[in-house]
Length: 366
Image (cartoon, rainbow, N blue to C red; front, side):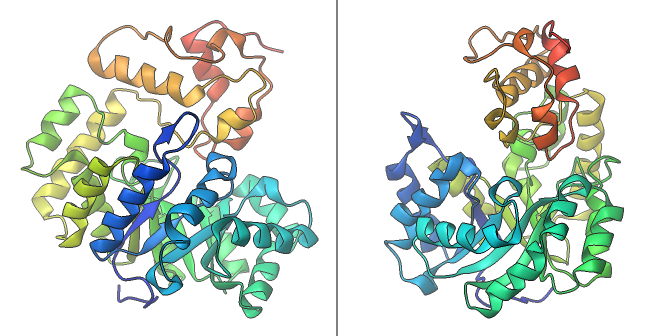
């Protein structure tokens, strides 16, 4: 696809959901180094949301990016998340607070966040899309889009009812491509049908396409000299309707590796695509918990159970053929679950979290 947003310099973006922390806060020194390297190599797209790090992601961008570089040096995306507005009148004050936190006067892109069958009606009934377009006319937003987690049928409905949407952010990677639950391929095809360019999130599925089982690693590592992440990024960026691939980079090693892959981007060969399809089959055969580590489930948990950390430990143990050891993970344990279901309501992957926790330890059902 030709560049439809000339302000975006390249097809690779910096996702600010998984930044490195120190003493419970974003490591500003490391973040500045990462930003500087990213910009110096010709990239300029940054993606955040108020829900990331409970607002600390936005503030970190102000301290490390927007206060240090002229406004035309970067493209900045933020999102309107479900929990931050109860009615249409709440939306502009929310946006204004986000602009202030990020230290900018406008967002290049503003996305209706994590749209799905269960969240869309809230946005629709409160006129969120109409308000976003009004704020675009007011100059506070340059482009209106949405991020999405649900079926292709739901996406088709949303785009049909909101034809002014300019871009769609999709979860898209080689293990989710043909998954019946995520429906990456089918959702991508809906975007093509509606002539909407695609921005990709979760190209490495929350790190699961880097930290993988030995049989899966054998396939990926046998492809050549590229890193495991490089093949995942190249898979997503090889599709013609994809204009941007986001990576939630947490340290300089990730930045440098991703820059090497995307600075002189080369689409996957047919032979490489065939091997990734084999690797995807191995992934699903190992029954991994498809958690991407977004941590939305943790914020509302009354028992402070670190659900993504528990699931990561379970996946790592399965990959190693060992028993799951969660003794060193702080916070609540699976047995502390009170079955309230808040985690499942906030999970963009629609995971049966309570049942999965029960497998890790006896939980109390109400």
